[in-house]
Image (tube, rainbow, N blue to C red; front, side):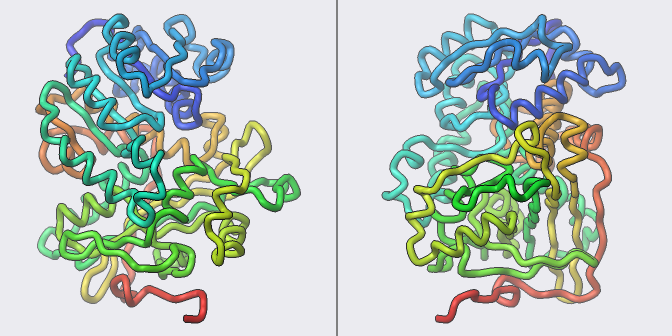
Length: 424
């Protein structure tokens, strides 16, 4: 719990889409006396760091209530000496990492200074810069490297992988399991269907990869990695291209087929509870068809232009559905959240994926600000299981209308759901 009268927060990657959504939430919180973190942030100071920093007027449009307390900096986060000096001189108490900076290096800086930390995903600069050396397995290599050091950080409180997925989905999974405390699920699938695209589809260009979040991170999962699932707490891989396979997802009256991708949340949850599971993701049809048209030469996809679907550039339609599907011997239990891009734009001038992920960061930040948890680094499921916190209450302040239900039959585990899309 933060005891300082005036808290200093530093946001890394402040000029990106995720930080924009988070700043819009903090802007509202600073004037809302009913907000869980109002007392902690209504007079806090914010330092905004980015390698390609925006001018102050950019932030005036996003968070006008905070503008008098913002300090902007242009820093290359690979230079950890400069970053550490900046954190020390600003007397930062919490780092919110919405960047692609190396997670272990950021934790090293914060641990040395006793600064608390939250991020949305695991990043490793060396692996990202040497993709060819880790082709097929970049995510699991990032996890293994991170977990070599994870338990050494005891001079800070840190919550990692707290976006929507990973992050909020771990909370959903544990909420669902608590409904059937005497039944052990056979499987746990993190599911996402993101139909976000231009409202005016003629705005789309033929050979551009469009995503609602970082295209580079998406392609790392979709092209660079093999399809990964968990079995007996062990990551297993199909020696296939991600987009050669699809897997069935049923959520009541909703049904879709998603591609199996390596993901932090399925690794963490299925390691924790010894379930089979994976992350099943369906993106917009334009990008899906573009990838499938290049599957004979997937490296060519990396050479295509890439763009994030930003509503301020061109209005968006579609929605982002993110949820969890638990498999039992004779039934399935599910919980998901759906947000349209129109609703997200009204709330934060950004798209649905960024708004949902920002709510996960907000909930983790609120835990660090308000709840007494022991020092250490936590995945969200570890936080929920091993500490006394109010993560769910903080999350639901902005992220509402979760839908839950039960399928009276089951589509089975990973091999039962699979279909090949190309002749073998």
